[in-house]
Image (cartoon, rainbow, N blue to C red; front, side, top):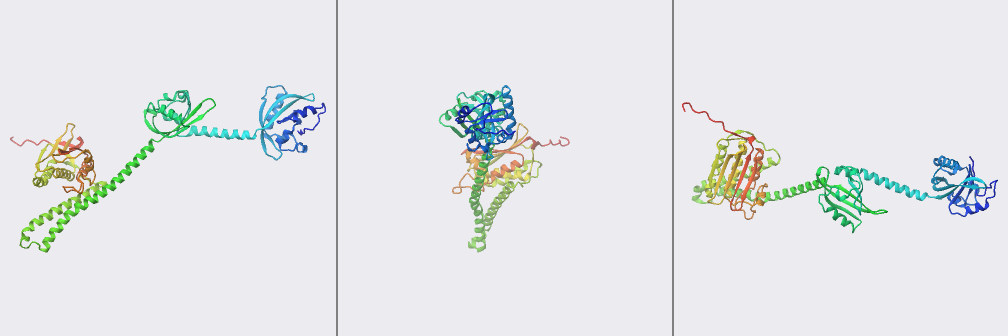
Length: 516
């Protein structure tokens, strides 16, 4: 087909100059098609195709060369059907190829008419390339939003700002809150059952009346299964054609908050560790130097012969002081080594069924002299039928630490009691109770920390490393027991270790002697 587009071409059947002149003055591009021939094209068409109005030789091309190949069959089919009287669209869009080879989009309004007595098609064309480009960008944005809306892990909720009715929700919303889309659509947002605080949504909407958007608003929402989780909400007002809408996005930050809390606990633990090290250095500088100074001082007296004739008489006293200082120093070092084993997870225990009475009685004998010198009375209430699954060494250290602390912090005239008794659930408790200075709740927390001492290093009147109670807690845990502390200032302290039923048994009954 070699149809020529030429505004000056003549039709053999009629003179159409007047009609052509009228169409040539129209600003829209006009094409008149009769059969396979384009019998008229106005000046605007020349501009659309990028040709000079008087350069008709440039337009001496076939129709196939002007219409994009992908649109040609569709245009020809619509022309054929329209000329046959069938119902086809009046307006449609297609692509034209310009003289420079570029492609443009045109909109066409077509109608049947008469040209020189012959039926024809008159098409009015407008260049809509820019509009198509805008449409393409809008479609891309729309498709992109739909994809984000559907795949984002954050929940999205779109609703009318005037009536609060849900227009759309994304799959994440349905999954997080455990609901079906058909149930949610059209429902009032305040009735979704997601607001853990009843007035939150109303306050949220009120805030949006004075601003177009809200960002990073913390909220606790009730999710699937009635579980409360923490979210950060983001909302933006969207002004639509009929009414404003609101797009709300929610990001679940529950795990983030947990991680932040864990980091905070880690930071607090690190700070506590640093403080503990500082306290350790402060305490140990005193606790280690005091017995060392005593050892060095008394040993120098003996070495240098200071004291003259009385020196020999004081040897025994000096040796006793040196022994006491060395024993105290060794106890501190042993406590530090035990704590190091505990923190390294290397504390060993040889668990066996044993009679705790001999261990506890030995502990009482070891602290009896110290109690006598301090004017403190020690008593005991021991159930001789109790047998424990325990480590003898650790049990002794527990008893010694508890009794030593009780004696140390009880004023003259006070009392210390050691108790071993069965409990109703088949377990047993080991307790040391005193009438000493006692502690507040905050001081108990300090005392349970390694190297923690209730009194400051400046006014401390009683020596000690601050490891007794932490070691008791660790040793008891190794034996399967738990420690509880009851204390009141100026009234006294009771420290109880509970051994569960699985670690406690009763002494087997002794057979009767013959003839009894």
